[in-house]
Image 1 (spheres, helix red, strand yellow):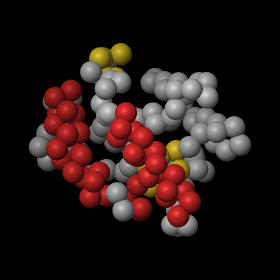
Image 2: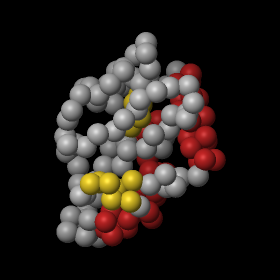
Image 3: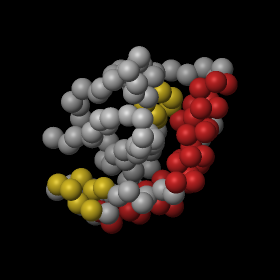
Length: 131
């Protein structure tokens, strides 16, 4: 991990390309499955709440085995063994005919993980800014 600004860390090797492709395929499957979906938040119209489509056990395993220990290492003053025990995981989709941006906001969480799943070709932008 590289600390970009105080308290903001980045890595481009957190997940394998195979994992990213598998997740994108699963999200495409969910999109076409007819599974009822609700907006992930009040700012985005397109996306999916991952716990609502059967991914809660996988996400909880990821949090327990990986995310909480990494968060405790990076933020020892904020994350202990009994912290970060809840999660709210969702995707958002940005495209010219749908949502195109997200307004400046604050997350109500101890730790936030942002993962760009977008293809490296075929789009521009996608900046993630921290204020």
